[in-house]
Image (cartoon, rainbow, N blue to C red):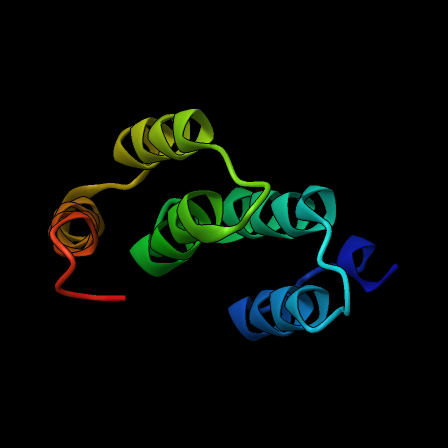
Length: 100
């Protein structure tokens, strides 16, 4: 319910995602909704939220590698300038196993 109140902070979305992950049975549908809401609000300037979203799709038992690739493509189109460069660096580190 709180997600419909504006303006929201990035911290709110991190808490929202943490609460969904803390559920005894995590539902990928609710986690995806949380990440989609976060990238809708902060996706043009925050590469970290995209990396976390890709990590979810890559590591969650119900995640989808194809979805991770689509998220990567969307992030490249949406992020601008330095944020885009930071995303590319972080994604490369994630793919090579240098960050977890």
